[in-house]
Image (cartoon, rainbow over all chains, first blue to last red; front, side):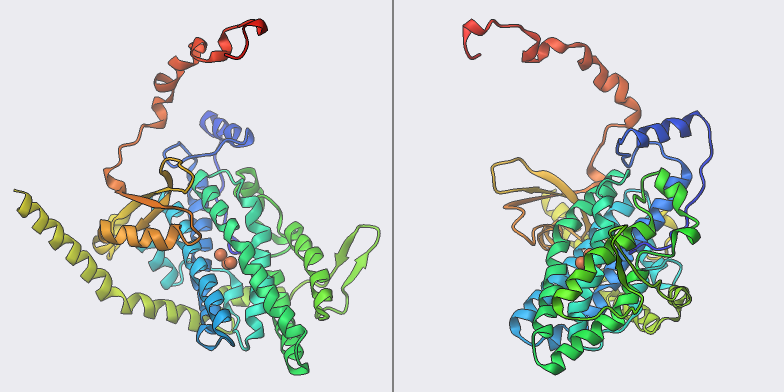
Amino acid sequence: MYAQMVKSENTDSGPEFDAFQARIDAGERIEPKDWMPDGYHKTLIRQISQHAHSEIVGQLPEGNWITRAPTLERKAILLAKVQDEAGHGLYLYCAAETLGVSRDELTEMLLDGRMKYSSIFNYPTLTWADMGAVGWLVDGAAIMNQVPLQRTSYGPYARAMIRICKEESFHQRQGYDIMMKMAQGSIAQKRMAQDALNRYWYPSLMMFGPSDKESVHSTQSMKWRIKINSNDELRQKFVDQTVPQAEYLGLTVPDEKLHFNQETGHYEFSEPDWNEFFEVLNGNGPCNTERLSARNKAWNDGEWVREGMMEHARKKAANEKVAAE
Amino acid sequence: MSDESPTARNEWPLWEIFIRGQHGMSHRHVGSLHAADSEMAIKNARDVYTRRNEGVSIWVVEASKITASSPSDKGPMYEPSQSKVYRHPTFFDIPDDVGAM
Ligand SMILES: [Fe+2]
Ligand SMILES: [Fe+2]
Ligand SMILES: [Fe+2]
């Protein structure tokens, strides 16, 4: 998902730990000043930050099309959507900061590659139809994961997720709306829509992370309720929901093995290429270098502004103090 | 943790944001953000927390100025009120014949 393969720390045992687990099992929220196991604390910082970084880096593929949107209305909508993603990043950074880590530190860890962001944002957005596919599939997959996280055990994280979820359905709908327009358009437009689906289908399935058999960090995270559903469970839910939507568009999901199993009531589908997933996660996807250098450039170019604003604020405060004396 | 970071000295301070919605409710904590000063905190709060008409009034408070109660005081702070059930109206049985009260 936005937080893929988050390494989960183990926890110790003892009365404190049992009491903590009992609170979680009782559905209580853990708040910033409460006692928590070191492993919980560390895993949360990692997971929330990775999620925040994904929202921020996730602005880049869509930002690519803001100046080239086909109409003024589409441009305003896309701009609003991308601005929301900036907001999502900020809500999540705040939640991470309640765990005693600084914003700049988190930013630095993203910029020098110590922290990761979702694999999905390392794919290029080649045509306008990709704006449709991203909203429909990528935000759609994000919603699958984020809705249950509204009930996650860490209070500030859960509250950030609630705000985010309120805004996500606009994202998915604006994407699907673009897809409908394209799919009902000229032959060339329909071809573009199909091409976008072809390129974004498997990367979207990868967003949920590796299959449960290989997902080594899940058990502890699920016990702590910072992960609510398993990767395969969410992936299945996503496929079940998305296939009929593709059919409605008259588009074909690029999977020859895809079929509906009458007995289980679920679609059966091909796994994505997990080697590709690990390559992308390890920095070797089509756009990893571009994404990170764009973030580094923005950070470096903005340095004089950040310093200037801070200096201005210090001077103003000093002047006000003098005036008051 | 923040002291270890080379850029931390220039990190904009953290502000807690409180927003009053439209329906006569009191200001409610919605989250936090970084800003160089209070004026900028209000502008940023508008962009981050009121993109969909969530509020008609914003308060910003520098996070470092907030004093919070500590979770370990939970017992002495809140337990005394648990034994004072008579503070709730349902403690008293009033006959139905008396009418609405
Ligand atoms: Fe988002
Ligand atoms: Fe997103
Ligand atoms: Fe989104």
